[in-house]
Amino acid sequence: MAKSLREVLSGSLTENELKRVRAFDIVGDIAVLKLPEELLPKKKLIGEGVLKVHRNVKTVLLQTTPVRGEFRTREFEVLAGEPRTKTIHRESGCEFKVDLARVYFSPRLAYERMRIARMVTEGEVVTNLFAGVGCYSIVLAKHSEVGKVYSIDKNPEAFRLMCENIRLNRVGGKVVPLLGDAGDVVKKGLEGKADRVLMPLPEFSRNFIDIAVSALKPEGGVIHFYDVGEEPDPFSPSIEFLSEKICKKKFKIKVLERRIIRSYAVRCYHVVLDLLLQR
Image (cartoon, rainbow, N blue to C red; front, top):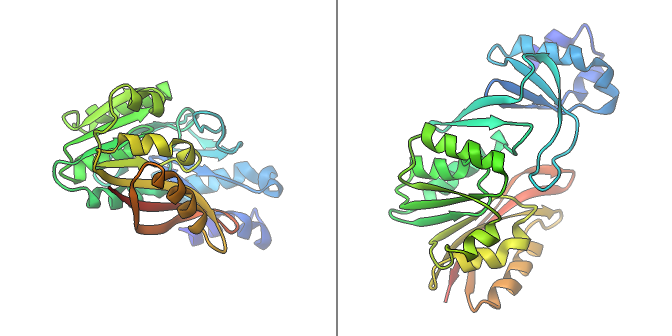
């Protein structure tokens, strides 16, 4: 499809400009672009080009701010198509209602969500500290024999959409949506319940590691810890941090797997460590 887009834009952009049109995300029927400053004068042409090439796309958005704020949202400009930020995204046999202007969502985590689902064993209790619109929780409920998923988020709009998505995917018997700060919610009734804890927001994981440990059953369990790592060693700083924190809780820690999920910037990565905690 990149070749087709190049063909559509070749009369409007120079060769050097074409090289600057980076890969973009497609969420449902919305394409989300990031463009360098020098291409902004031609942003409408590029948006129309994407609309022509991707017949399933009805809206093309330009991301105009980085992800920011307590709820990790961003702002957009409509470049082409229908003026909206709401859509339904389909992934792994699930459907997710999303409003890109009011909640955080990334289609690039689809593999990671299924990877976790394949690790869950029958009857497990899972606590998801940063659930968003419910993607991890619902994929687990649809593709594993999980017993219960406690699905927490503090963004009221994400919580509302999560509740809709739970109904839409018919997983209400397994996924329990909870509105509030993860620390407060765990302390008020989820301590010592989980076999597995998900921490899928790397920006917040270090601040919540004590909460994640307290959410595990007394004998321990698995924590999926997401962090930001940099070259030349994306993992050692995370492991050092975790070892110090978790040893204070009188747990032994074993790293089951470590992997780079995606690149954030030059030499900077979104990483995950699967941790087994045992007494």
